[in-house]
Amino acid sequence: MIIGYARVSTDAQVLDAQMEALHGAGAERTFHEKISGARRDRPELRHLLDRLNQGDVLLVTRLDRLARSTRDLLDILAEIGERGATFRSLGDTWADTTTAHGRLMLTVLGGLAEFERELIRVRTGEGRERARTRGVRMGRKPKLTPHQQREALDRKSAGEPVTEIARSYNVSHSMISRLK
Image (cartoon, rainbow, N blue to C red; front, top):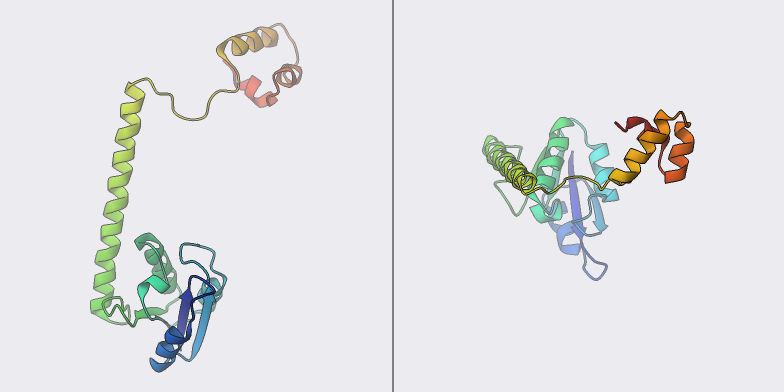
């Protein structure tokens, strides 16, 4: 079954041209919504993806109607593939998983996205390491000052219950238990 998906971002925009193009290309059923593509929680798209079956084709007029980023597109295409369905874009003929050429193009696109993610991971790791060498502490600020930590440890070694110590500093008892 060919299933169409149409989307516009605002109520002021109309879906007519997309719906006409999808029906003209053979869409037997269409899902449509007026919602920003930047939102990941698009109810009609979710509804459509949940109903895709083996052999179905998801059809859109342009890629930007389906996804706003390469990562989002690849995630959606992966889900379509997992369901045994394929994907076609009328305006972007290279994005057609019903053909070997289209699958190749999307595989290359996926490889580029993975390469980009790895570059970002490496750069952020290097940035964290440079910050550490400059003495920047990562993570959340401690709830207790070093003085409070020493004081809590002294109280703990004096036999005061951990829950009482924690309550006096307004922290959890497990935080006091973890102090060394």
